[in-house]
Structure formats: C-alpha cells, structure tokens
Image (cartoon, rainbow, N blue to C red):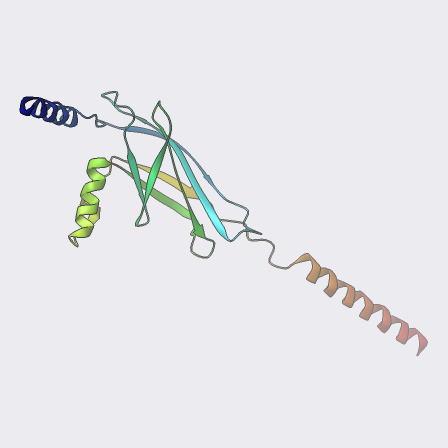
Length: 169
C-alpha cells in the first residue's frame, strides 16, 4: 500500500512539474467600450484576445490586472480565446488607454505574495499586456432640447407682444 501511495505521489509531482506554461506569448486583441452614456450609470469595458504560445500551450488559466484591480480572464474556447470585462462609474472612467496586464497562475501567485508581504506587485513581469482605448463617453447635449424649446418659445412670445404693443401705441 505504501508503494502505491509513493507511486501516486510521484506521478502527481511529475504531472505538476510538466504543467504547460506559455513561452514567448503573442496576443491579438479587440476591444469594446460603452460610448453612449446618456442613460447609463456605468461604462462597460470588454477586451477579447487570442493567446498564441511558441510552445503550443493551450488551456492556460489567466488573470488580468487593470488599474490595480485583479480580474479573471474567462476562456471562451479551446483555441486560447479569452475575455476580460469590467465596469466603472461614469464619473471615474477616464478617456485614454487602459493597460490590461495578463498573468498566468505562477505570476499571479507572485503578485498575491507580494501584496501579502507589503511589497510592490509591479515588480512581477506580466505574461502580456493588452492596451484598451476608451475614446470617452457621450453624455448628451450640453443643453436639453426641452429647455431650448421653452426659452425660444418665451423669446418669440416676448417679441410678438412687444411688437403688438408698439403697433397699438
């Protein structure tokens, strides 16, 4: 029985040691950002990307870090397509580039360890970085059309009554 336990332990250790990791990653990405925020309270950010590894590794668990927040990267398909999504309040969302840093399990564990020990997690090198551009959200016109119509109606009425009183005088 002891020999069986030792054999199982060595097989498990060997499979863990041979676990795939991505060498020389290449990322192809596309992104979507909410642009019309006239009736919304949050802006949605989504990036989809394909990860290609030189060693052909597939099915790698990935994590993303955006502006100090850690997010899971959801695997969409078996051919290494992933997605990272998050939302931000309209007032906090800025226009410009957002860097989405991607980490595998090993580097993500190193980040967590650095955070626990009070060290700087930016020393951990990401597997890859995806840049997402936010052009800014349209928040609506500066002046509401209802207000503009009311002001114009008042101006036309004032002009009409002024002209009438000058004609009658």
